[in-house]
Amino acid sequence: MPYRKAIWRRRGPGGWLGSGGNSFFVQDSLVKLQPPGAVARFQFNAKTPRCKDAKMVEPYPEQVLLASQIVDAAFAVHTALGPGLLESVYEQCLVNELETRGIPFQRQVAVPIRYRDKRIEAGYRLDLIVGGLVVVEIKAIEKTLPVHEAQLMTYLKLSGHRLGLLINFNVALVKFGIKRRANTT
Image (tube, rainbow, N blue to C red):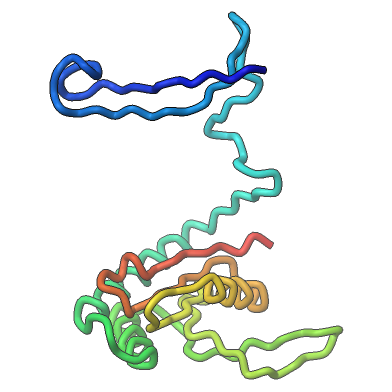
């Protein structure tokens, strides 16, 4: 089918574009010409998956509540200390904050690895398991990389937990250092 150039416009504060005011928003794009009365073959709606193999897995409500309490505790620690300290310092302070709030946790939990029905002790340790439900991986680095998220996902898979938080304290605002991941398997 042929294409034509279309100009999309939106209404500005002074009315439609060109009718006054200084706000101009014009976006050029190519639009496929449709015969008159034709209906688009595919339309997105709220239930449309965005890719073929996408799985929408929502954690349990108690995991969501616990994760929000962990994030709140991380905010409190970051507000008190700010960025620039070692990971171990932030871990100890987060542990103290969780103790103060009465939230149960396990610290530096060994992760056993099974390979061909053999248990391998490779020395991998989870920073925190909070409430027996949420895995927390703490970082104090300049920028989290995809390998850090992959590490969290591997920990979730190996430990059998469903929800994990990757918290990087070495950022100006801690809200930009928190990543939430769910295990879909």
